Image 1 (cartoon, rainbow, N blue to C red):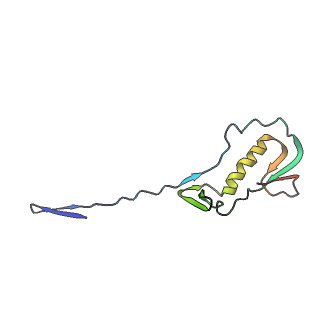
Image 2: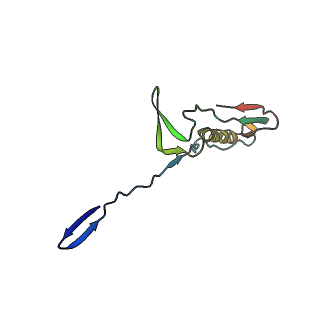
Image 3: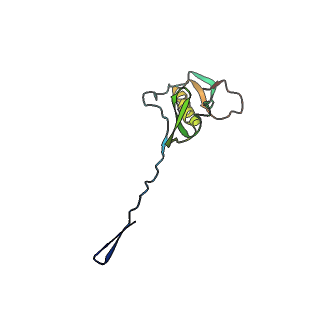
Length: 123
């Protein structure tokens, strides 16, 4: 706060520090349109069922904060950028979508099955 007196009149000037609002950005991973091709007319293996398991990610990279490996033994995290969901789910969803659209199996899902699926896809 700055106060100045000139000619018997007091002038009060307030100098404030305006804080900017912190804006977080949320990131997703989506398939490029080039990889999203037309499905086959019928599945190559219509009798087969495939289960897509969640991608396993090390704990250093598995959180909502986006991590970048700077050097061999150094990881930095973005402050204002985060994943919109868990990285395992964000990476698994496009894989499941791609395999469904490729129509390789009769049924593809990431959900638990009542019986054992014919194939399990994990990464």
